[in-house]
Image 1 (cartoon, rainbow, N blue to C red):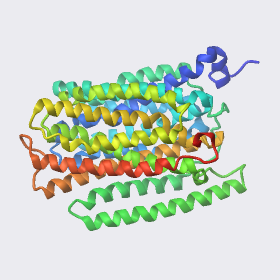
Image 2 (cartoon, one colour; image 1 turned 180 degrees about the vertical axis):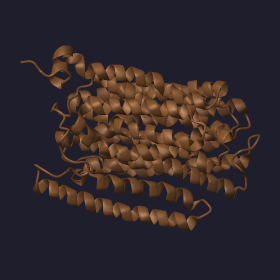
Image 3 (cartoon, rainbow, N blue to C red; image 1 turned 120 degrees about the vertical axis):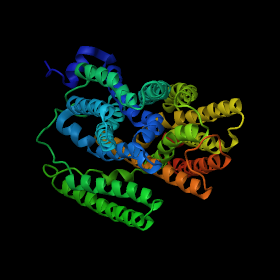
Image 4 (cartoon, rainbow, N blue to C red; image 1 turned 90 degrees about the horizontal axis):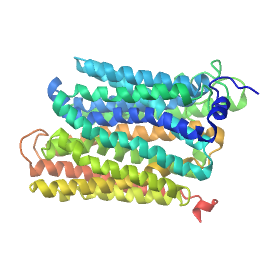
Length: 498
């Protein structure tokens, strides 16, 4: 029996048992481009701020705009895959990511840079849940941890090497060069997609362009709520805190409306399975305890992860007065250790309780933040060694969390719910990340004002370092909160809990 060209059965027949690994490699390259575009920009923020004469609050929107767009677009991934299939959805996003990188690199006005970052964020958001869907559907349970580990090793190598290369590029060619770093990854990903990514939707079914409608009302509410949350956090410490409170209250009201709408849409779909539309977020998934607790961990973990990704390069350049090139070089060992840790922990995920691995990772991550005040910046050699040591400790923690959180949270879901589950848990992690970037910027501005010292300045200032250390302390506390939820991911009715 012949299968349509490009369909999942045809590709499996052509490439045999190794096909699932080739498919994982293909989406890994695209995800590397998406993650690189989200994190490497932080190295260029000081240089870009000087070029466009931006304050810290406006400069951080280069990161926050990307995060907001990426967060919202994740919710549309299951609908896009069902309607257009893996290859068309994936390739379109890669083209959009490529266009955003090129446009951002040649833009002469800051609003155009922000527009390019939004385009990149929309593409990256749709891409993010796809690898988790493939791992949980294409691989057997005893292979999922290994697949997550191998995927994680590949994905973190890009941001591990990226800051080092990016720092050199910023010093040599300026901030524009950072945008062009995604170009080779996008080109390679498009070539791989044409060979290995199927045209079918998850599960091997043919894509249905006339399938269920997109929940535009839910997507609109999610967008409004996310923007109100992020703007509210910024305005809370700006010149109009009352307006910030109004925006945060609006975000809360929109959240309540979103939950009500998703429940109504789900009930309507259950009454009429053959018509209507699927909810943007299937709230029935939260009935599974592991998924519910894993979602809480993902949200809090997102705050700590992306907040620190934004804070650490700024701390090293503005607080410790280190060059952009040196920042990338100092973070390189930690990135390589992260890749090794993910590969090792990925194999443990197939044998050890996932809640235990996540808990260990959160504890190590919290310790790395709590130890930052031991760096005083006076002794340059000691400063560098402590920076590298605490960065490595934090990345080992991330290595425990990354391959085990998604697998542990979604193992109890039915197979047809996996696309929705991957979309939801990635959405919550990125929502936490978007809030974390804004939160770190706000708290840092607040503590700098309390110490009566500006962010920029020559020489290492004890008061400036104190403001950074207090912000790192907040991240440590947030990780400890996530640790409480991680312990609840244990399921008493499964062998994993024994």
